[in-house]
Image 1: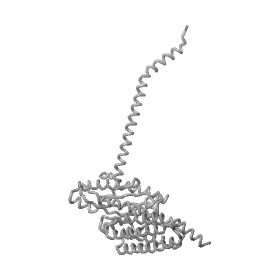
Image 2 (image 1 turned 30 degrees about the vertical axis):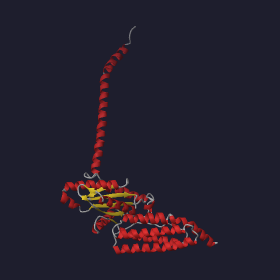
Image 3 (image 1 turned 90 degrees about the vertical axis):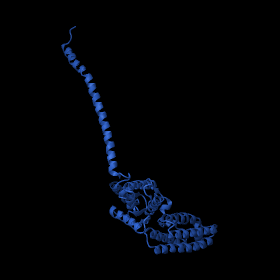
Image 4 (image 1 turned 60 degrees about the vertical axis):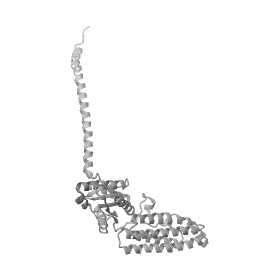
Length: 367
């Protein structure tokens, strides 16, 4: 049988192609190796870029954010404030007499102290708070979704933590702290300035203390705890008992407590703080007397027990104010008593036990 000449040509043309298959496989393998290498190098590049970004955003000595990172975070949080009305606070913290540490023990000891103080601050903050080194011995703490009163409590906790810690580099160290809440429509510069001014007021008053910016937005943040929600003592109509005298006097106690808190946090003179404290104690005693008469007349079966609670609360208030006057109690304890003991536990909890009796009395009177 004769073969088709074209088939011979085809076969001849196929042979060189078959001969190139091995080099083709080698080429594919080379390409794969090159691709793997590129992927590896890209991964290493991404790691390197991430490390560069970390170095660019953190303070080399303490590992806290640097100023650039803080300002970027502030911008984001202020946007949340504008959009969702989430409260936002900043703490400015300065190590007292830091220059003495450098002068006495050397700059290496000063650097170690900064590292140790930063670690103490970090261990005290909440998960949502952010620490930054603002410069030198000054730190800033950004507190999202935090009201002024809660930030002041946090600042006092930080102050006590630092004061009670013995640092290897310099033993006893204290800090002064300024606190400010971002006001509606406020920008970063004036907000920071108010916190910084509060810090310098703390320094001027003797150091080792917390001072709050004079402007106190009286607000409550729904995401915070019950005691923190009411630490500003904001009256709501849902708290009303239905009795005109009781409700009027409750509102008066709210105002008295706010006046006392403002005097304490703003660093007002001792005579002003004493006047606010005396007003609160006087109105509290009058209210307890009036309330006890009202609930007894309404037939409240636990009236005697409630009177005992009143005496305990009045004694605790008087003792706390006296300890504060002597420097043995701090602003944090004052917050705790007014927010938790007086408001959350008594006015908004224990007092509710007699509300139905007042309502029944009102209904009977109306009929």
